[in-house]
Image 1 (cartoon, rainbow, N blue to C red):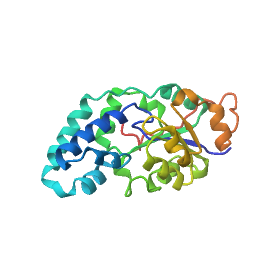
Image 2 (cartoon, one colour):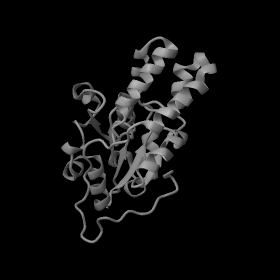
Image 3 (cartoon, helix red, strand yellow):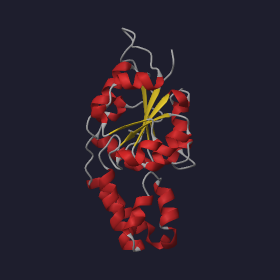
Length: 233
């Protein structure tokens, strides 16, 4: 049977947080760099990359900025993107491996998992900034996720919202579904094999068509092998 996996970005894909981050980084960029529009280039990058490449000239302010980020993340809303939880639960029932591939760090994921304990059940693996040597749009994050799931990249579906994330999934050789939760559908259409406003427009049959997932076998659906070693929750 073909090994297939679904690989998910976190912010703006599973959780409806991207617009909150846009506001936060816009204010930080205006305060420390004098131009809020710099935040538009930040999306999809790891925190280390952001601090080194966008705030590298003000290293004496790094601790101050990171403290503000920590306070912000502790108070932010962590609601699901419409249809995301139901979609993930269906994948679990079908026995499809799932993995979060986020540019966020492990500390942020630990906080998220405290509020969403069900992540332990919904995801086989969770990969964070610390797992990668290169940030999106490099293919490394999704190539590593495919390897963790024991799948060939061409048998994986990537769910992304940012330009960098979409490029990462595409360059890794995966099939890419672009969610228009952060950017317009028109702006991401050339970077994705399929676009949708959110998960309410997607179902399991679409996945079967895109990567050739075999029909379910009675008695086997719902089986997910334990894989807690790469899950910080």
